[in-house]
Length: 151
Image (cartoon, rainbow, N blue to C red; front, top):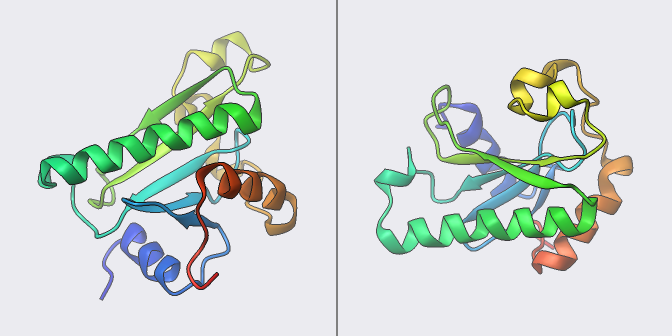
């Protein structure tokens, strides 16, 4: 039985029941975040579930990190972001997942230098919208050559 939110999302992703899933990568599932304080904010969840990068064998670590950077490259291309921030904490939900956050030149100077979760009210940001977010998700699927489960 899933114990934390990441484990629950992994079950939904595997079963094709999460509309936020962009697709299956070699190391896990790429999803659009529940809210979009910055357009294109994604999360890569390791599958199989593991508590941290340090708990993975070397080859799996390299696959996960490579997939993470591939997502960043695709986001740079699709969103026109200035750079990508990568955040892997696993403190609240001890299941490996990385927040992949596009950062934009149009952000206020005081916000641009802070982590997204400090600079923005993530809980009050625009929620995921399957219709509005579909073009971005489809562009990422094409660039990354990935699909959701069951597609």
